[in-house]
Amino acid sequence: MKNVLFLLVLSLAGSFMSLFVCRAADDRVSQYPSQLLKFSATKEQQVRMLATNLNISLPPEIRDFFDAARNGDCAMVTNTIERLGPKYVASYHNSGEKLPEWIPFWQPMTEVESAYEAFAAGGTKYPLAFGEGIIQSIPAGSIYFGGSDAGRMVVTALCESQAQGKPFYTLTQNALSDGRYEDYLRAMYGKQIYLPTTNDVQRALEEYKADAGLRYKQGQLKPGEDVRVVNGQVQVNGPVSVMGIHALLVKVILEHNPKPRFFLEESYPMDTIYPYLSPHGLIFELHHTALMGFTAQVLDSDNAFWTKECQTMLGNWLKPDSSLSNVCAFAETVYGKKDWSHFTGDETFVTNEFATQAFSKLRVSIAGLYAWRLMNQSKGDDPARLRAEADYAFRQAFTFCPTSPDVVIRYANFLVSESRIGDAIMLARTALKLVPDSNYFNNLLSQLLNTRAQSEGATH
Image (cartoon, rainbow, N blue to C red; front, top):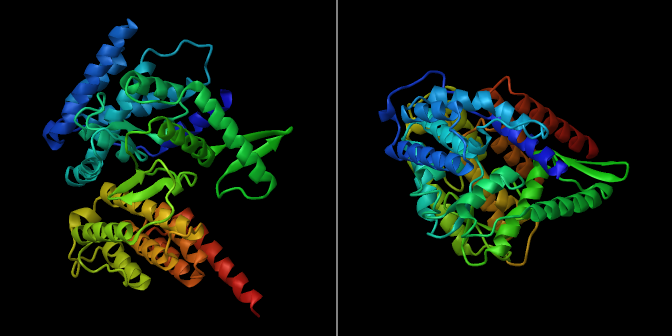
């Protein structure tokens, strides 16, 4: 299992890099919604019960952490996770050493801390809209995979009872190869739903390595996939490979729990489960069987849902036929120049980093699914309709957050695949105007300009 643990540590290390930092302690619990404070108290109770079951005293780090959470001290909560996080990652390599006593309580702590981060960074309105929007769309008794920190932790915090699976069971696809995380899930849900075993994890690793090794020989690796063959052995590393393994474990859970409905919020794209996904409000429904295609009703419903979301947040101007040049002009005016003179949307949205990033992530995920289905057409899909819906969804995601590398790069790739290199260059230039020192956007623009030059040179 050493390979699985090594991949896991890479994934965990990446998660710590994305932490928001609360710059100052705030002892006013009134700034947080009552659901968050109730959730924190419930997690503290869960931790105390776990300590009793393990027959250990509650470590001082844990007592201090939950004291801070109870008092609304986000800085103390966040700083504790920042301080302990590297030690948690290092503990996977120190198998011969005694583990710190707080290790068994890591999952509840990170759930509380990430929920606090979201409300500290985003205020109350949009984290609540995000979490409650997802919760209200999922039927009771379902199984939900949260991908982003907000998609997992805010939803977890706002559920009636995460530990009891009310109204649904909350997991994350990001840590399915982590034995500690699986132990945590098994303690809560093991009697109600099937969860991957150690053998399941090992089989997923071997299956992925066999497939990746074959694609390595054929020169068909996916973008960002780190696969090497050393002394005849396939070695896989990095987040793309981690999520490839986790996608197989998602399918294990799907296959062994045939009755519940499944829903998923994307973190990294997992194209092996794309055939099973359909848009479902803010997130995806994950079906038990692959879908032959999207009906007009599915596409109409998604279009109407997100058009309404955009109207609420950005004003009633972004239409399916709005040009990319108008979208870029809006981004430069509103996000770049801070010119609100003609803005009819919600100024608290476009000035809220949590809100713009969270909702753009949700929308670009659906756009990515459309783009994938367009490239892997089945008889049940209408290519022209998919193309139109993908482009509209990408424009919406870009308008939500024109400085998101995820949005800009995925949209640029779509435009290049559609032979719209000029539009891709316009997109990259707009993003670069908003973030002039961005290496992502500088590199992207350089690559696009080189691609256009090569294409023009080949025609002469």
